[in-house]
Image 1 (cartoon, rainbow, N blue to C red):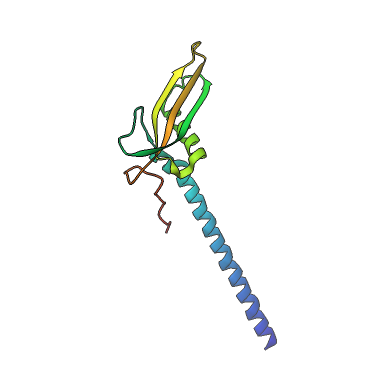
Image 2: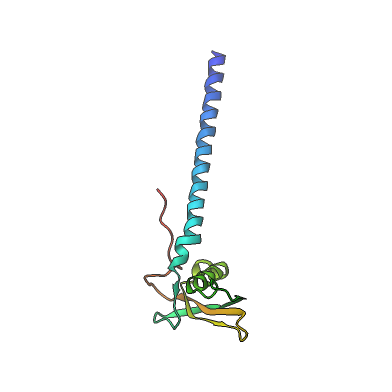
Length: 138
């Protein structure tokens, strides 16, 4: 009888460990999905504008970078993505839009400088990130 109780206890402990391990793996998968969302999908929600924004907004700050002038570095997709990444690194989910986006080559045409103003929209908007939370993964 003692062996049976001991075997049941060991089996119960093994089942609990397996259940805990499955729960941990599920949490890690959820974290990876949220990281992917924040790193890729949500980044695209940041509105890019070469002018001002009609929505009421609060200035978070200025961004700019300079890099060597190449065919890739003058591409607007490259410039927008780089500015988006910089804004997320600095302000996280608070940044909703990048306005007054500009880029210009240096006088000797060896470098390009891109700049913008990062803003947070006051109130709701279709593209806002500051009050958006990804839905629970099912």
